[in-house]
Length: 391
Image (cartoon, rainbow, N blue to C red):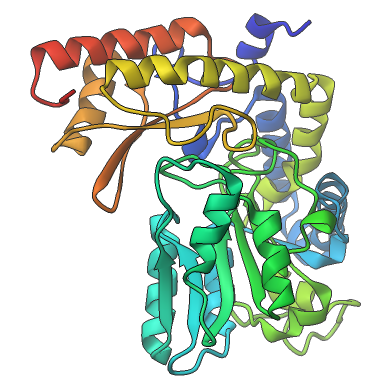
């Protein structure tokens, strides 16, 4: 049995806040945060040894633990601060030419839409945001809609495994398989995936994958990874050229030398991955995640009914994890989000995606039905007393 109260006490979150926004930045449990501080203390006690000498081995140990968890070679991943940083590495190095196309969806994370738009405009390539119909009705429908954006000029695909504002699990494995048949480079944004749903890179077979450890894996902020298939690693330069270029002490991997040796920086957050994985294992996180998914799904239709809305997908594990997004009618999404926080002490995002607005709640082990009831009651009152929500 899961001791939810004991696990809730492991988190440092303000108990006065109803925290339903785990999906944005995660939250670090005490054992992992303590491990983080121990690494920082070790760094400050002997900075030269930590950064210049021992750091490579510390990072190797951490990468090996992560690689075992996501099923890939440890030398095929490097740590980065966030998935946006990772995709900037990829987009900047791709040899895009005028007329080339990057095929994506209209459901992607805004920062990465901007990244692709920036580099495509510089090379006169095109970033194709193929529309995906909402609500989604089946994997097959999503796959069919996605490939309508394909053309002879498509050079690569870029797609989220779990979308940000709509919180949908997309059929990435199937899409990658089709892309391979056409000889396309496959780039996957898995920011929300590690620690949330199972991830097996050997089975997924994406060429490039980035995921955040500081979300559902619960490491400190600024801990993410970039995986690049070994055969294509030399195509991608680091954003910062540093000591790893023409290294005086090269390792067996140019990929690691180029992207890991970035000069002076505190990489303590990267080193907490083994402790985060240990925390998850000790607390039977597979069972925890299953219970959280159930709570999230059990409340989805209820919120839709209150808000005069609809579920974005079938209510099953093929489409949903521990996050649910509800289309809402509001002309003041930012004010609604601040109103929920300032008047009800509820932390929940209200997100724009093109012409749509979504209210997205996340369920983690410290959340209960009572938290979702507080959100429900707050929304009910806002509907009756303000002009922030329409039904």
